[in-house]
Image 1: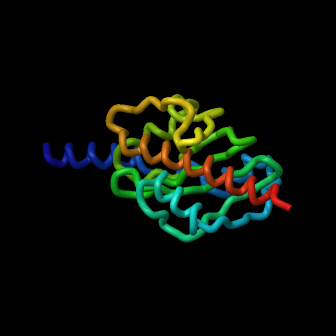
Image 2: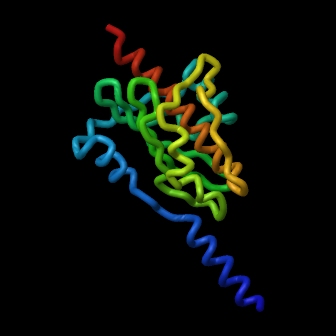
Image 3: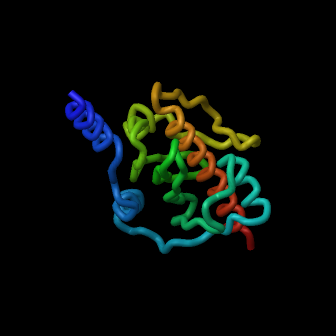
Amino acid sequence: MIFLLVFLSSVTTAKASGVYQTPETFLQESFRGKVPKSRMIWLSGETGKVASDILQHRPGSLRTRYWLDKNRSAWVLDEIGKDKPITVGVVINDGKIESIRVLVFRESRGYEVKESFFTEQFKQARLKADKELDRHIDGITGATLSVRALTRLSRLALYLHQQVMVSHDAP
């Protein structure tokens, strides 16, 4: 009986965690095979403070890589769900989320956030002046921390896109 419980637990964990798409493939698809050169944004000063407010903790690094083509940017970001990082790809177009995709999920629960029924809620979302999304994102029972992680990352990507566009448009 114990063997059966251990086996079923490992099957559930194996199903939950995994690499669903590599960041490289995500970028290739997002830019239709013509991935622009990566750039960096520093998470210091006011940008770092707002990023910390959005994440509810200090970012894990002082800079973040992004890819920009005109008014469209792509971000590959990590955030802790419960215990382990979730890697997410977000594409922002004209200040709205075009797509969000879970690339790597390392948690034992909450993997449902990778499903399109959940990620479709983020499409066309914008960032309001208070740095919140302009819409409610429905949760998933048993995946609360993963839902919160994706919501924070979507807000962060939108905010960083705004910062990049301001500096990109500056003379």
